Length: 224
Image (cartoon, rainbow, N blue to C red; front, side, top):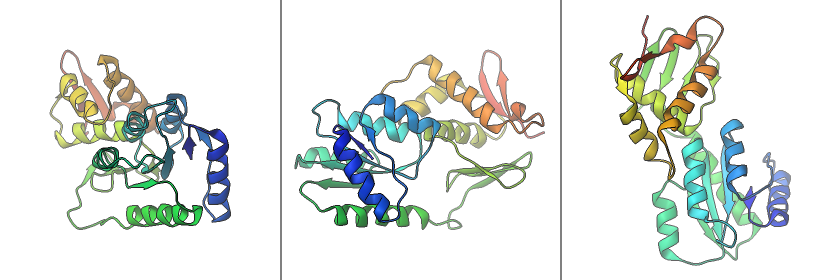
């Protein structure tokens, strides 16, 4: 639960806890969003009216760093803002006033929809050196079947490299992939994401080479 008002964030988080949802209250700013990259969550409720931070920009940052559900909360009844928020990938947009009971129901609805996403129809599953990469569900499991949590940006890069089928993927293309979900990227963004990916995919058996660097070109997946 992120809000410009930490007191309001705690109030809503406490109510969600009484409804059986594990919740944490954070102030709505870039630092809190960056925490989500290290500790992914299932859903973020973002309460932002633009008093101290741009809510839409913060929403883009959240969506770029992970794969959470996103519910916007605002007291501004602005149709353009609602449309932009939903088009960027938010699951819902609530305008005050509303009851905490309604908010909880909407949060549960988003969580149900995300868990009920089709697993087999149109599924695109790749197997690489014992790893299972489900491009439809956006999940990756190690050779023992344990799911590895990736941020949205990390999975976007991994998917682009895997879909190339062993062919090198240029850094320029990967930067373009990342730019689609983030409003502020640089040449170092790809290097940073690749480094984080390699750490997460390291299972102590040489898996650091799962993503191989092609000097002067970019990166490719190694099938053997």
